[in-house]
Image (cartoon, rainbow, N blue to C red; front, side, top):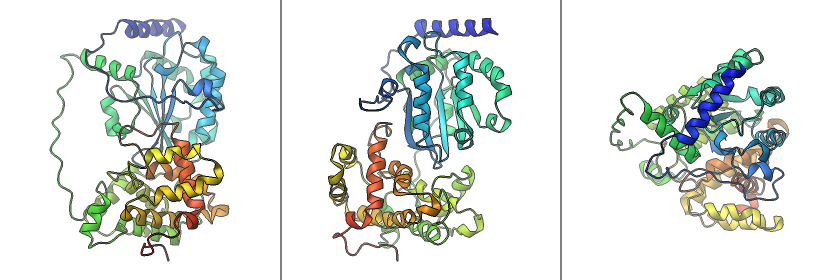
Length: 419
């Protein structure tokens, strides 16, 4: 077994040092390193090994681990790395989450010991494994398969069913929003080499049919303006008013509301019903988490986030402001929104404030709701939300929820709010 692992390491070293690199520049994905020297794990976080890029298509936090960002072992305390992993995941594991592991770049110089891997698996107790809904291992090698056999006695059958091997990046498109992923340039180049090495060269790219014009009844993936025009000036999109109305009546006291995901196919089917203008009766599903996921999915699929692209950098600046001034800054930011966005945001935040008032029962405080909704209300025009941007988004959203009445006072008296 040891000789097989050593052989695998040598092969990976050769691929890394002698692989043919493409002439074209790497794709514009960018890994954002932590610049916060006050971060308790700055020594680890600065390498960009771990990224959290918001929610996937089905309301689950998306966590990315990139082996190629790991420095040589003598430059990284692996015990600190394990602590940092737990510190980061602790912020999200109470919700369902998805993990993408980019294996390329794990070499003999930076590879943790088998003992460390065993200890790591044991330290990640049930709460980390229970809410992990999918683990995608990208570019698996013999090392991964050997490792799997070594750890098989420790790994439950249920956990094993969550693991999916992904040989080429293009396969991730079947499971995730590919544009949301933060993929290191080394991984992109490695994938291109693998594609080129396929027998007969890489398959020709599939022809993408021109996008169909949206249906008049379309709700998902179209702008607020489009929905308003097709619904005789209705300011609150029907999918929002219907999910909020149902959750207000049935979900305010549900523990962990907005933290759970739902069956992928069910969410797709409901989206299709909405887009076709057909009625959706949430009572028939018998699961209050279904409309909760639908609401988050609607927000995430807006072509432009509810808080708009232009305000994104202003939101990130919030953490630089004294705590005593943050509520007034949040109020100033949201008052710069176009009126339709402001009205929809006020409607949503009025409801989330109601949810937070039941936090003793539902465990969803303004802080917890901020972690859930921050990435669904704002994201950059290019790329994904970086791990370093998440605290600002979360705090901003938390303030909107906790100080709803102060933030949304004295503007838009005609705005629709919850009764």
